[in-house]
Image 1: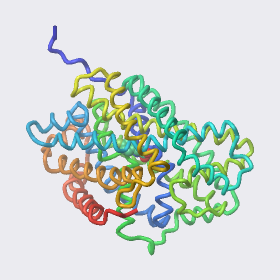
Image 2 (image 1 turned 180 degrees about the vertical axis):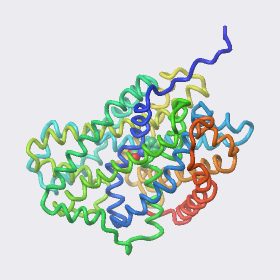
Image 3 (image 1 turned 90 degrees about the vertical axis):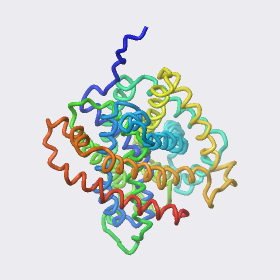
Image 4 (image 1 turned 135 degrees about the vertical axis):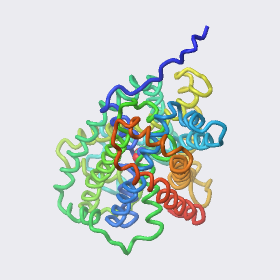
Length: 455
Ligand code: PFF
């Protein structure tokens, strides 16, 4: 018999837990694997400046908007929109978020799986005495293999599912709190080592000295796509996490802390990669493989390098894991709350469905590489669809929802914890969300749709 009392929704247990979980979502392969090569391909320092502007002007306000929707809605991404805008089609944004979660997780788990292969290679000390060319060849032959990358991807999905099945506090929060500080410590150690290589300065120069001759509209598109991806915005991961944030927490402060942590770690990853890239004469624009070739090479030059590399790839896997957890949670929260399944059942169904798409993404490097859409393999199609279309589109609708649909009073009430916090920034925030963010995101979205073959 129903008592009419809804079971209490799970919440994060502490401030640090909230930041660790949200930063865990934000900090991932996007920071360590993607940011350095996107920066490399788009002119180094100039890209960096545009990226930081995107984070401040768009990233933080959009993140705050997501937290606001989630905490006010107290539901999954679909349910939150439905609750805040009853009888309106805003729930479609929620459905889009769930679709984006599928798309992202499919290609993301493929790369996350590669990190597991590299953990095993570190254990076998297989980078030792290898030339760049050998490392590069063995990476290339690994990703086209029809078997190994797929197995690792499925293992990674299983790990993700195990954490998500554990729940918000005992799964997501617990692991984030443990793993995020470790990641930071080891990145710092690696950055110090990389900076002490001969020729390291050239790498820093490339990263920090802006060359605006390389900047085009395309650069801005990539910077924004990357900012959205890196901050986990536009698809409801942070709406879902926002719904687990307690009513007394300061949402704006949380958004700023998470964005700073994410940007700082992306920069730190650049400081690990670029000095090494230049010290070893690798092209800074070498692409996605940078981290799987450059880093093993650095490790092979450090005393006890195999141990460092083992730790690094474990931590890279872990950074990816706290991100995949947040993406899977979007789907699991939706399935369990809207389709009324148990968390475990929802986790199993979501993971299996996503894995099917994921395996296709993995195989598109090898056996399925002949199947292209607009000249891109399936993996790149998913990446482009997510980073350059779904996330900005989701972000656009989220800011329009906060800026133009919800009442100013409601938004202020949520952000100021019913007036308990001063929130002096609120008029600026609202101005950005109402006018600047929608125009900026819309321009980029249109550009991306009409000149869709960028990249
Ligand atoms: N922010 C993650 C990264 O930088 O690797 C990726 C990501 C996670 C994107 C969660 C979107 C998301 F909802």
